[in-house]
Image (cartoon, rainbow, N blue to C red; front, top):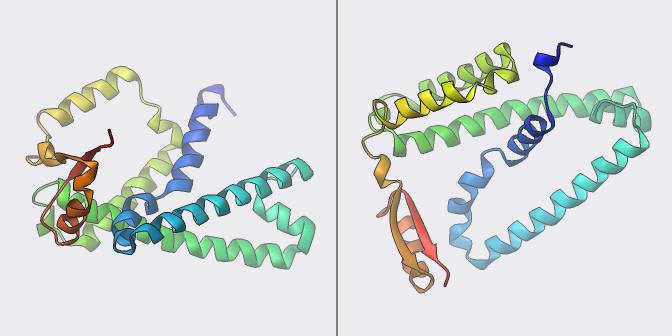
Length: 200
């Protein structure tokens, strides 16, 4: 492998974090808000489960240092048939995950970029999927663009391509005691964008 194409520590970390977080962290708060404090309990259980899962994979990596991932772990402990079925099911789950991510992103784009409501959601989702397929075909290092080019792109986005409602992303700042009323405003669709909550 050429040194110019190698993935460094931080890029690998970013890939793992991105795959772990996915779209759920952005769409779940709105889904769990009606359940009140029970949602916090659910998040706590999820954190414990993810920590246990991370420790299991760390132990497997120590026990099987030559293995290259879950397929090899399952094959070494349960055989090739079990490994094939497990990875096949994982492959199918990736299809479902891609669809969920596309739906979540399209839902957010409709609120941030005006005019996208006129484009069918299915067309937006397909365009996003093919965009990321293109990034994969070019190679993950295509994201390691030189700083000057990134600055030029961000400057263009902040001027010529700036969405008309960009300033409405952060709509208000409220105190902690105003939080219950803010929840009802969001649930009834009276507020768009983000609300900053002052804790002190």
